[in-house]
Image 1: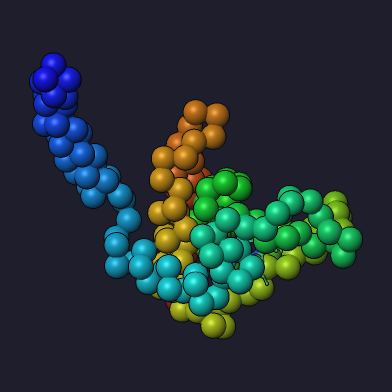
Image 2: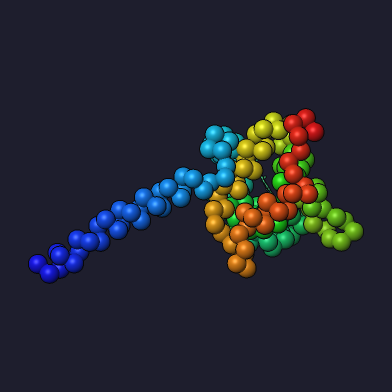
Length: 163
Ligand code: HEC
């Protein structure tokens, strides 16, 4: 009897917490759900074979292979994708990873293909928006990676369509 009496008041609190959680989940996503779901489809069709179904990347992604290339990195917020502003991320998807190559300093060769002739401007923006939507509230040294990336994008935004 005592146990039942004690358990009862918890139910409304759990319900309240669930409601608060649901409300914050639906209202806090800064991304347009239509863009995110389009980006998810673009990702599944073009990127998942290399970067993993959930964007988790491949093992040892930061260790250069014998041929001078890197394995595909995670794009789900576990790697360092968030260091780059929207403009750079767009260029990497559109023109491939040649932007990361610098023969003056290393023998690194990019294995990231160019998608500019296969994906439209809006599809590239959508796939990158989808990837950012996976980052949630992940932090690096206590700072939100979504916020850091947004700051990096202020000086380097997505190019305009046709740009
Ligand atoms: C053939 C394998 C392959 C495919 C397919 C591929 N990538 Fe990559 N991607 C890579 C590799 C390898 C890198 C690591 C950097 C490099 O080699 O230039 C990379 C790097 C990236 C980066 C930079 C990540 C960072 O943390 O700096 C982004 C963003 C990216 N890819 C997005 C995509 C998207 C979006 C698609 C699909 C439209 C895609 N990739 C398809 C292999 C691939």
